Image (cartoon, rainbow, N blue to C red; front, side):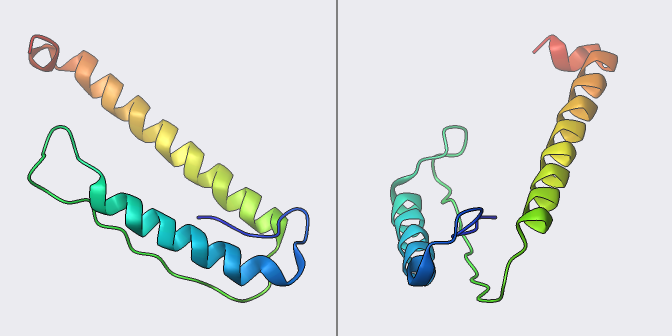
Length: 89
């Protein structure tokens, strides 16, 4: 999730910045190689919301996302420690 113009408003350049970033990401995905599955392509889906944004809401959603990622990694680490066969590989 990205936002343009937060926390400092950028006037009328919001749509152009988001569109340019999306096109740059799509271009980068074409040449990106996944090391463990080189024959597969990375897929990217981009959506644009043109409504007003609240920086507090954006910060809250970002913090929730980060917490979910940390919880996932903690879960994986605990499961790997409990299953010694995964550590012996």
